[in-house]
Length: 544
Ligand code: ATP
Ligand code: MG
Image 1 (spheres, rainbow, N blue to C red):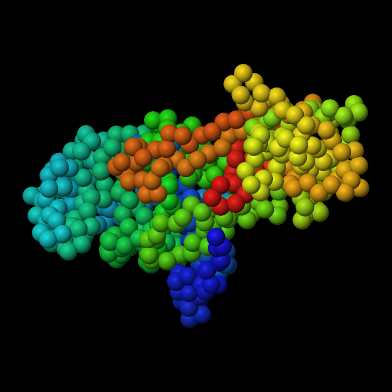
Image 2 (image 1 turned 120 degrees about the horizontal axis):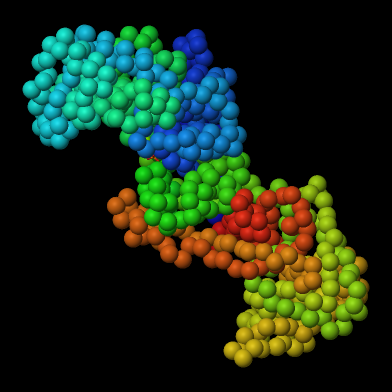
C-alpha cells in the first residue's frame, strides 16, 4: 500500500489562526497548552494533541504551556508526571512554561466565592445520587434542588466551612446556578467543587475541596492567556459551560475552545482507564510494554519520535472522528528507519552449517552497513567453517521458485561466499539439525570469478563469533480491530508475544546504535532495560 501525504492544505485550525493573525486579532500571539491529567502514561492519541498544540505554536511563533490538570488527587501521581514530561520531550517538543491546575487553587476558590456572592452558585447538601436523579434527561427538564434558593450568606458560610474541613466527603457540593431546564444537560447546575479528604501530590493537606474539570479548565486557560484552547470533540457539548464560566467570573480573558477529532487506532484501546486495566491485571508487562499504544511502549519497541510526528501529520486534524489503520503507523515507522539505520545480520531461528572444505582460519568479509546510504559506513564480518543460517532458508524438498538452499543447490551468503549443500543431518524426530556444505573459494563477494549464479542470497552469522540474543516479536494486542470498552479484555490476543533465541553478528552488539535492520527480517531495537534482548519494531513490508 502506498500512503501519500494529505494535500499540503492547512487544517481548519491553522486556517483559522492564519486568518486571525492576518486580521490583527491576535495581539498577544498564539499561545496553546497541552493539559494532560497525570493519571497514566501518554498514548499515541495524546501525541496527536501534542503535535497540534506545540506544532501550531511553533509555526506561528507562539508559546505552549505544559499544564498538568491535577484536580483529582485520588488517581494522580508523581510517576505519571515524570513519565509525561519525559514523553513530551522525547517527542521533540519543549514547553515554554510548566504549570499545574493546582497552581490556581487559590484563584479558583476566589472565583467560586465571587459566583456565590453574585447569586450564581449555591451549596447543595443532597447526596450525589439525588443530584444525579434530578438532572433529567435529553427529553425531560431537570428538577430544582431544594437548596437552590439558599441565601448568599448561607452559601458563603457553608462554602467557607467546606474549605475549613468541617464536613465529610459528599456532605455538600458547590453548584453553579445556571438553568435546570437547559436542553444542554451540562448547563443544569453543574457541580463545581466537591469535598475530598485526600492529600494532593502538590498541595498536600492544604485543601479538602477540589474544583471540577469544567470550572478549572477554562479559568486556567484564561489565567495563562491561552489564545486557542484545543480539545477533543467530546467537549463540544461542554463549550457553553466553558463560555458561561468565563462570562460570569472576572478573569479578564476569554479564550475560544475549539474541538477536533480524537485519534482512534485499530487493534488497540486508547483510554488511560482501559490501559490501566491492562497494566494492573498484568495482561502486559507495564505501561512501557512494547505492545502498548503508549509513547513509552512505542519507544521501547523501537519507534522513533520522527515516525510519530510523521504519523500525526498524515492523519491530520479534522472534525470527523476516525479509526486509523495500524498499517499507517507501521508505514511511518518503517519509513523513518528505512534510510537511516544500519543493516546487519541476525539469525532468528538458527540452523547450523558446517563448511567441510573450509581451510581453517577465520576470513574477514567486508560489507556496507546500508546498501544505499554510504554514510553509515561498512564493517568486517568474520566468516568461518561453522555458521548459522535461518532454518526457514533450507528445505529438503523445496517448492517451485525456491530462492534459498536445498540439497545439491547453491546460495550466496551475503558479503561472503557461495555455498553448496552437500548433505543434511536429521535428529530423532526428523528435524533438520545441521547442514553439511562446501564453499566455492573463487566466489568471494566483490571478487567473484566462479561464474556460478546462485538463485538467492541469504543472511548468516559465524557460529564462533555470533552473539546469542533473545528476540521478542509482537503481534497485535487484540484480536478484533475495534475492541469495545466493555468487552476489550475478552478480545485480548493471548498469543501476542513470541520469544526466540537468535544469534547476531558481533558488531550489532558492539555498536552503540539501538535501532537496526536485520537483513531480510525486519527492524529491531535493543531493549532499554534488558541487555541482550532485541524487540522487533516492525516488519520490512506490510502484511508480514
Ligand atoms: P484518556 O481517556 O486517555 O485518559 P483524556 O482526554 O482524559 O484521555 P487527558 O490527559 O485529559 O486524557 O488529555 C490531555 C489532552 O490530550 C486533552 O486535550 C485531550 O483532548 C487530548 N487527547 C487525549 N486522548 C486523545 C486522542 N485519542 N486523540 C487526540 N487527543 C487526545
Ligand atoms: Mg481525562
